[in-house]
Length: 246
Image (cartoon, one colour):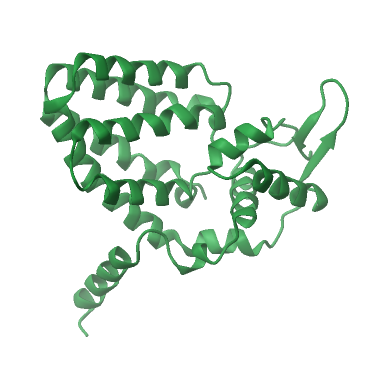
């Protein structure tokens, strides 16, 4: 098979196999929590000595149950990556010198690099169509609700707290579009969320500015501007997700 045909075949297979790939889907929910926390520490997104948010917030941010989040964190405490500090001012912290684990869950995430890139491609195409239609349909009240979600994200203390209104923002944009393909888009969007790792809040402001620009385009009924904003917003994932943070 010629080289170009081989590349095209790989791309087609990745689209068919999406969301995700076999490596990730074999992981338990607890293993995905371990992998995402370990990747955040490895890339300096969670620094030594940093206090982690409440377990309930971590669960919401990583879209797992509180029990799953607790088990994942407890396993990392047992491995010496995290430490528990009792009493007032206590909590769960990243160890000052966390060990570098040869963790199979992290290996699975790294093995899914190509799947992540294909999911970004799919999201870019699908979200462009969604915001184009949403810009033609959005009402002032819906735009106000989108602005409220941006403000809620702005007030968040950490990534996990930010993730809840941020995810709701994207779901609401999809609902505004009224497109029948919305469930297919949400499948891709939520599959990509499984690969996110917690980020420091100062790295999220650019995304909020893009959301503000998107709402402005909706208020103006400017579909072309809405698509341009969305393409830039999704393309940033290629620079910000763990696949680029070597």
